[in-house]
Length: 254
Image 1 (spheres, one colour):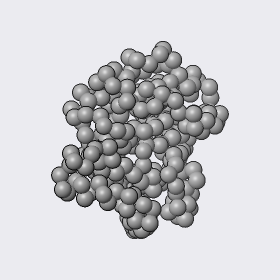
Image 2 (tube, rainbow, N blue to C red):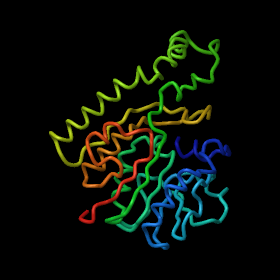
Image 3 (cartoon, helix red, strand yellow):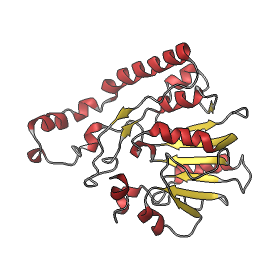
Image 4 (cartoon, rainbow, N blue to C red):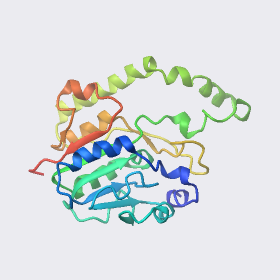
């Protein structure tokens, strides 16, 4: 079903074609690496990072998306949970607006860990905190087209989307992850919420999201495996981490 959905002639399903802020951040990371270093763009979609570096390779599940890209690099059709890439061979990995569409994102992160070289960098920036009402398209569907429960859910969106409503829950979950890290130590599982994606029609951005991720959960996953997480070295930095890309560096000992 996923392969069929992501091979339809609908460019809206494949993300943005321009990612200026992400490109600026990645240029800074590339400056730390050799020019020829292999860079994987996992979920390259509409080519927002296409041909970004000499060693650029774009990977996407969608053959339709790949065939539309200009020849500004190399491209491979593949599932991000089973990368056709040699272990410990990549110096830089970027994945933007992709992981939220993966039913089992922990498998994708495991592949990032596998193929990244010691000392390598990964830039991870999915759409954080995807909402269940978005997958249902409630923000764009009319009230008269909804059942009574969906009407109530739609009416409650402003409240449930407010920071005052969401912040206490997010804070509690983050504290619980930090406590588990202290008690259980290494190799923490990835904590995320499952969503039911709309794979019948593309309504709006992230109506096809399969999971809801907190950047803190991704930070804990990498931190518990010995990675350095830039800007999240302390407990307080992790607890207060904003809606931003997670940048990790693999230990030289891994």
